[in-house]
Length: 313
Image 1 (cartoon, rainbow, N blue to C red):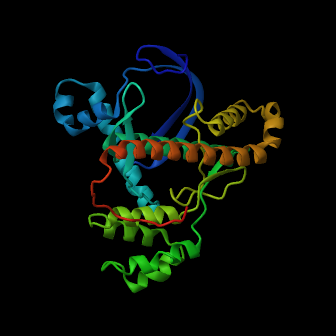
Image 2: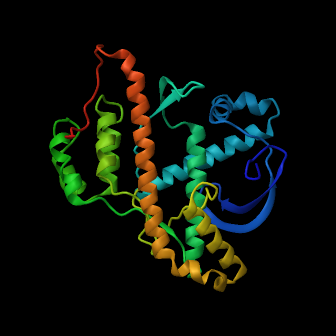
């Protein structure tokens, strides 16, 4: 209850004021503890409806609609800049199982990125980068979110598959094995509107290394970020809470309060990474279990599909 963002209710927060110029370029950030009052709670579909017909919403006198449109415009500029810097967007389709009131699966829903989800994603990325950059600039400890470049052998194993497609050229091979981000972007773009698009995106995503938590900054390959951390979800992720503590200590210039936590950062990083893998595995297995339960009603029927991998059990 205390952490819920109910419209009109005052809540405590750590606020990040992020200043961008009209081209969407980052200018500066201010961080401070604050009391906030949310003006509106929007589900993704509600925000998407406003963005889809924003002219009518703005004409109706909606200040909220105008702000949403401006944020969406800036999100588009930020995404384009990140792509130019080498950031990779796999644009995968996420399958979610819809359950009834008794926990029985009733449908499998495919979720894709929308303007609203993209807006939130870009805002979170910007805030996370700003906090990591702030702590690093001050020479203060931070629990970084690190994503290292993919291994050459993992990318090289995809070449025989990609050679089956007309858009994959020989010059791409060496650049792909070298982990060149722009080549991966090129491959994703070339296959995006083709029947093999989902397969190509899935295979490339599997070839990536897992992002992990580290006390030392090694950058974030997938986002093309020089410094990145998790700051935006301290309620549900412990690493974010640690980053909040570090940021507060840096802002109040009292790092001695967190000597014990700073000393434990390597262990916290490793343990958090391990627990994330455990949680991801549990989530995937529960989804697969419910998908199998849902599909059991279609036993004996034939469906078309794409095989993206084969494993022995």
